[in-house]
Image (cartoon, rainbow, N blue to C red; front, top):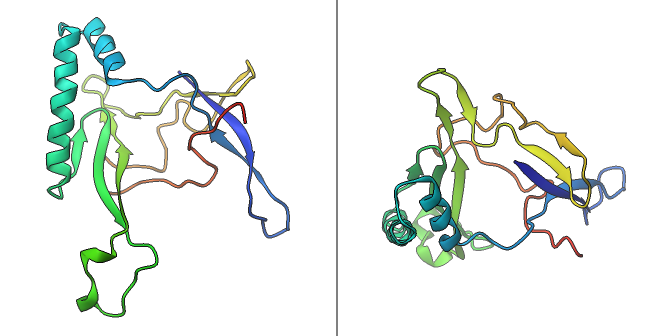
Length: 176
C-alpha cells in the first residue's frame, strides 16, 4: 500500500516571510465506485456481485437515516462517521438568538478507528504500515504512519481525534 504525494507551496507567507512547501496527497486513477467495491467484495466473500451491490445500496440508506437523526455510525475496523455543521460568519450575541438559520453547510466527519487483535492483543491504526511515494518517482519512503502504533489520533472511532488540513490531503491534479 503506497500513498502518492506531491509538493505544494503555501500561498501564505510564514513568519520569516517565505512561502513554505508541504506534501499533499495525490489521488491517481479514477474513483473506485460502488460497483468496483461490489466486485471486490464478491471476489473475497461468498456474496455475489449483486448481493454486494445490494448491501451498499441499503447501507447508504441506513447510514443516512442514522446520521440525519443526530447519531454517529461506526463501522468496526473502518471508523466513525458523524455529521458536523458550519455556521461561518453567522455568529449571534446571545444563546437565545442561536437558530438553525445560522447553519451554512453540513459535512460528514470521518474518524478512522483502531482495532484490537484478539490473538495478539495489540492495537493497530487503520493507516499503519503505509509507504509514501513522490508522484512521478519510483522511490518509496516511510513516514510517521509506517508501522507506527503511537499516532496522536487515538481513540476508537469516537468523537475525539480528528485532523488538520495543514499540509494538504485534498485532491491534487497531478498534471497541474
